[in-house]
Length: 200
Image 1 (cartoon, rainbow, N blue to C red):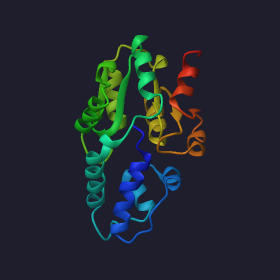
Image 2: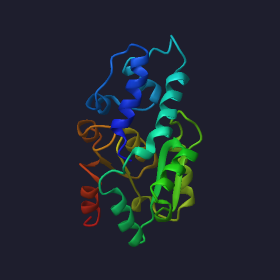
Image 3: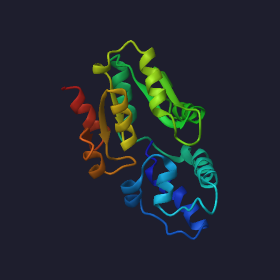
């Protein structure tokens, strides 16, 4: 989803309620990281004054109520359909809670193009590495023929943990500078990634 601006907006609603300075989308992309609690602390939330659950629940509720206003990232659906037509197995592995992730995938009419849609079992974005490990055990595909496509440092870390290749696109939650520093393959958008992967 093309959701970076919405995520920054929802966070700013929470920051404003607490008289904490708001952040720009540029600052969001420069600072966003996992664990989410650490990211929140880096932009001014003080969890000595209130539980992390308060602001985390505000974000998750706000996102669930507003995600239907979003579009997918440019080229995303077309590329997913192209891979599907080429019989390339595709899975969504997300730090989002599993039930909400499946709702989002269904809303954007992508379910029929994907072999697996796997989220986490909590609202704290924990467990992506474990879910990825479980997934690889069920797939009959060699690790050297598998690649994670993501937009955050977490996606790179998951790929490292699973010992598979990683491609990162910069139109999501982390900026190109941070993605480049990982040493992963980096691209400005999904179309650029597609043009690269079909000739590799």
